[in-house]
Image (cartoon, rainbow over the protein chains, first blue to last red):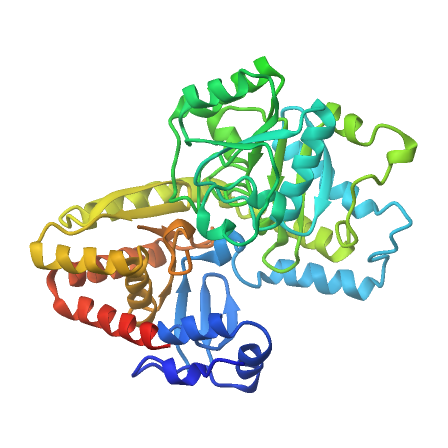
Length: 416
Length: 50
């Protein structure tokens, strides 16, 4: 039975009521519609360009969410749009399936050259989750081990395998049993990782170089290098999930470059799409490739229908052109530093702000309960109802009153 | 609670300043005004009634 979302619209806020919204409410996810109406954030966007979103009722919204780091090149970049139009007009082989798609080779070469190290082969997919699944399979095939170690508070995706590498009960509840033999260790805790991998039992350690949805946690400089060293010593593959951190978000093509590590596999997605086409990639060493695709018989032992489609490949190549030609990596590094400095300066007097942290343009502001007794009581009362309540009100006010779209990290959203 | 600030990479200095000013205002309101909290309470009430 569809939920009547109209009854929960926030007073004073115009709410999307078109037929398409109504169809979404009736046939896709009415709970989502209700949540957005409740927060007064259900607006219809008419046009999106660069960092700005324009609503049907004439508002301009500044996007500080970027679709969870999908829009590194902004919304509807004209160069990427044109590249896709040209690709469509070409009427070339989009998904013949039984041929060698040259454009996938061009993209793979470019990704490997930008990544460096020993990453010399690429397996494409359509989403970060799908590529995490691939990385799990490849790690098993390469090492002959089944188990995977992950860092607690990670977000790797919501497919069954990826979800098995996340310890947040909200995402897992009701979907078990998940993959057996996965083991979480505290993020940044090298001793815990050492204990886990010392058994030489696990195929891989998969980790985000900076935890994004976990709350923008930038690890100590040495953590990833030490983790890599432990992995090498114990025959455990060192896998970086760079779905949010990669594609220059942290200032370099991979965050791995900032931490001076050379992973055995890297997962890319989101911004690889140019903000328009679903595409993801597992970058791997030749050793891993040969372990998986070990004979002619196994030439397509892991693949996916849409994985090398020409539109996705073209979008990714165009996105790389934009990121490189417009020097968006160095720009992210430079602007990110001054942005954090300004935030720290302006928010210094507020005891609710505990820390401003991040790297490049992947940044977070951590809030804690206020010291003033009256507000502290309210904060704690809301926290008991739902830990995300305070954050959601901040997000709502930023959107409705300031015209800025942002979000809490997933660990503290209203739906977790 | 961690609020993310992850704009597109071509964001301008002016747009970053706009965010800084906006979040400063909202945090100031949270720390000084009951309105911030009463509105939150109203949302909780509406959510409970759904």
